[in-house]
Structure formats: structure tokens, C-alpha cells
Amino acid sequence: MTRFPRAVAGLALVLGCSAPSDLTVKAVHQYMECIECVAGEQDRVVALAPESVLLLGDFLLHGPPVGAVKLRRDYLRELQRKQYPPAAGVVDSLRPPFRRALENYDAKYRLRAIDALALIKSPAAVVALCDASLATHRSDVDLALHRAITQIGAVC
Image: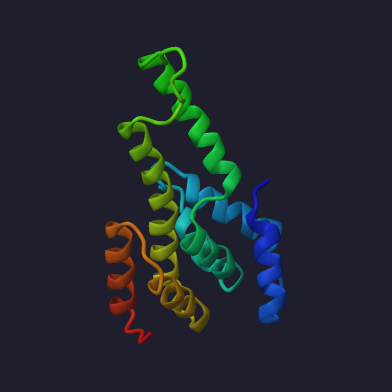
């Protein structure tokens, strides 16, 4: 389906825990991609901890799966082509509004991972949040991350 099952399976081996089940992978993917998230997607992911923590931590550190980003980028390029037909010889890069939409897609994954990890509050969830706090993210993601760490009373 995406890059994360293999990457997370390797991380699970290093940490000495089992890789997430297909059910967990599917639930986390549904949570990350839901539009209004009114069908209990977040609750399902939280209930699937500790398996879901590995996936959530991966999304927090790395953003959406590479394949999902490529699909989103291709979709945005097609929308852009319809609105702004490319001139001959012009490189087909995303214009600012479309680039922002792709950045927002990345931020959505990271923000949802923060929310779920803060609800889980397990030691592994706290480690995932603290590890992510060492990296630089978009300002709204950094703010949400630091608020979540403070809210659960974690010390990184």
C-alpha cells in the first residue's frame, strides 16, 4: 500500500516489539485520510495503541507516505494545468497555491499524529513526540507539538 509498513516493521524489530497488524495499518491510514473524521477514526487509532504508536511516530517524523505525496502532487499538477496551461519550455513546477496545498497535506498527517499520540500518552507515544520536537517543522506543527508535550506533562 505505502512505504510505512516496511519502515515501521524495521523499527519494530529494533525496538523489540511486533510490527503493526494490517488492521492497525488500515485504521491509521483511514484516520490520516479522513475528511471530517466523524466515524471514530481517531478513537480507533488510539484504541489500537501500542501498535499504532509506531506508525504515528513515523508520520510525525516523516510526513505522509511517499506514494501518497506523489499521488497528491500529480493531482495538484493536473488541477494547475487546467487553470494555468503551461507555456512552451516552462518547467512544470507547482505554483504557490498548489505548493501550499501539498504542504498542508504534509502538515495534516503530522498534526493528526500529534493529536493521536497526545491522547495515547504511553511512554512510547511520549518518546515519539519528544523525538519529533528535536526537528524543525512548519510553525503550526511545531506549535501543536509543543502544546501536546506540555499538555500531557511530558519532559523531553
